[in-house]
Amino acid sequence: MSRNVPILGTLAYFSLKFLGIEIPKSVVIGKDFELAHGGFGVVIHPDTVIGDRVKIYPGVTIGRSDIHLPIKKSKFSGIVIEDDVIITSGAKVLCKEGTLLVRKGSIIGANAVMLSSSNEGEIWAGIPAKKIGFRENY
Image (cartoon, helix red, strand yellow):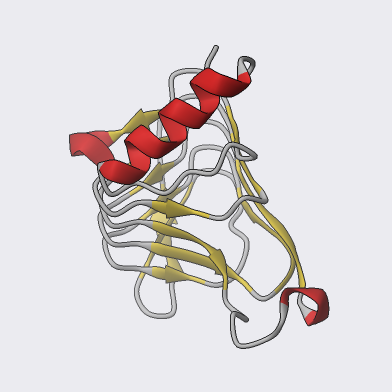
């Protein structure tokens, strides 16, 4: 509702910012989105789409990896987090060009630095993140 009523959306945005969470009003968020443990330190790029039942832990960053370039020179177009994804504490999901996709049911491990798209149900960890397994029964 807060995204459909401009004044409520603005109040929600600044309330989250006060709590240490940066989620611009342009971020599309699906049903049952959860910021685990209050989501302190979460930063999400404005060109992000988040699916249903996504869970994000504190300290997660989702955004551009080419921040040294002016936005007009960037080839970044966005990040899509599909349904049933879990992004754990401190993980970074960063895209340099095009659209990075975190596919349905994927898990991004703690402090991982995800620089490429995943396939459905994969578990990623490390710096840079690599596929380390598959998630069952999500």
